[in-house]
Length: 404
Image 1: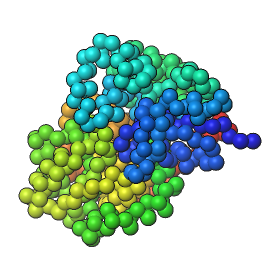
Image 2 (image 1 turned 90 degrees about the horizontal axis):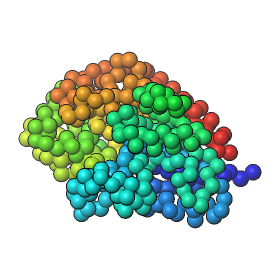
Image 3 (image 1 turned 90 degrees about the vertical axis):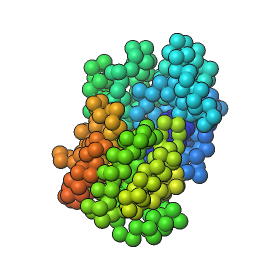
Image 4 (image 1 turned 30 degrees about the vertical axis):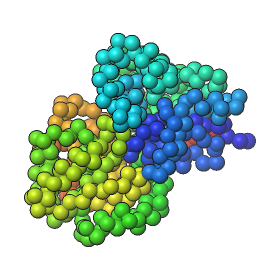
């Protein structure tokens, strides 16, 4: 009997390393199915290793009168509002105007969302079962979604999200904090690791092939020994934070005899900015530290870079999860303005990391945290990687059975 056509929905309509990666993981785990990748906008990031994505309006044409399954592929979808989504999807020349339009969004949110995104949703990456006109949804699933800060969202946003989740046939979340919030509001969600824990198991061969590409050859030629894979978002870009970050990375390089490779985990607005990386690199060169700015935005090149590093440190949760999958030393960096907030960078490690492995650390504590991370027992790291992949496979098999 043929499988029901399946729509994979998520934020892979913008360049974010994690979103593009989880789309590929979930697709690989649903073999021999007719799949459609859908987002809020049509995009084609195949050159960067992501899936070609259509806008939601195209789902009806895909369904052709048939019932479909809809799977939210994962990521921190529950807290993203329409204004944030519009900014992250905007062409560079429109970003500042949309940021300036936040007041208008707050005054007339549904009308503003319809004008910018094509439909009036306060939380546009969260689809209720009846969200697609003319499309019959057989099974609506939320797979490993996050919503750590859902309690800080306004009541209307939260009401929309909870109604969508209550209309779903299955809900899994990726951290205990999101699970606890939803339980408090009457939504029963199972706990499952992020899809990216399957990176090595599903795409190890692809990543090894990319490790031989020109981008990685340049890294190996620059650092024939070891290197730290370092990433941070554009909001780290003030001079004081960059001064501290460069000083900490210089300590890391000198203490452990390793180079520093700076890479971007996303090129969409509010993600990573190449100019900010160059400013850190200039500081490191003045300190006589070997540094390389990794140019590629290809998902598999980035995975190969992380796979080859001695330690990962960055503000990207998915950078950390790929390092976890490779049983590598890892830690996240908290932005100075966000250190008092738990956030996903703390919630995910608190849920899945063994005791003694750092979650998110302050920028000024980076060097000491790297030193501690490099002393963690490798067997513990390997056992954790294996256990999380097994846990995800088992839990996802339950969803796949429901979709059959």
